[in-house]
Image 1: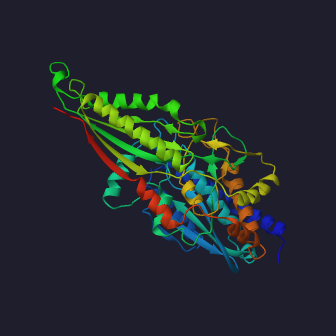
Image 2: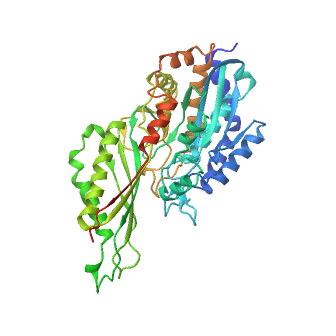
Image 3: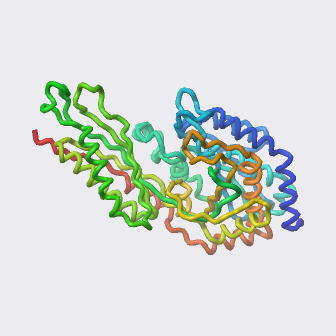
Length: 442
């Protein structure tokens, strides 16, 4: 039996032999970005690489997801290494799709690359003979919570229930026998690795204001201006910001997706989208109630109707402290800089998994000094973001599954899930709501 240090050295060699494949796959995905639940070309790229390795593949999970599993010599914990498939619309990004504006301005292409790098590091008889347990590599769709109107239409048709890919995979049972999940996310304006920290959860809202059309110049008094209702609602939300507790990290950021039809007509239908983010489920619920009041008040002020569709978003993110310590020790044994992170205002459906099992969601640098989701966010250092990130995950898995998976079993035994699967799904469905309030007294 190899020592754990020998195993890690061997895994690093296996990865180095094939790292160019992982890097090239990341670049191929970057070149043809797709948004959530539409990642068909991305799916095929990953499928072809996995098939070339003679691996068994479970495909078409939640439309575009896929996974493969490798097994140690003995039974033990089941670990998932995750990569995300989708980009998001970012006009002006140098690698955006010219028709859809989709771009990998959050670095999901390197997630697939470092997931594959971890597979390369572990997928050999020499390594697996020393491990107890299984490792699944899951490419998940639709992490970016965008195109809400389109997704809600697909949801109403029964294509899927949840707008986030990991949520849908939980519902479908893909994570039923997974004990631990992990993935490494890209980050801009950052060097080395970041671990720990927490993140906001969210609910999503799609709002339609219904007024009454009339000639904007000749007969505006005969109309009901839906745009005024929307503008008043957003002002109401702004007026409530000082009521949010600082440590709840509330973020509400609406956009107008339809502001009217033509300029010489009083706007009859105006639509908004917004997230309500917060650091806890209770904080999100409270802020969501205030936002609903703001929307109703805007409609009431001008005598309009408002339809408020609330959709379950993502749960707040946190990490299993014991699992994080194992990952952190591997970082400390490399030359890469590492630092502990604070609370982040963004959201991810890894937070959903964190409520069900031990999870880590570290970050890796290698991108430009730009904020994610912007045209300036471009990964430049693939050696760090793909190879080194994959290596750190592989080393952590070796620690967990070595010696009869003693460390992995200890992590699982010390972890108390915040929710069961049934409790999680019940909570998700309780967030879903449609309300129509009509204040037209004419």
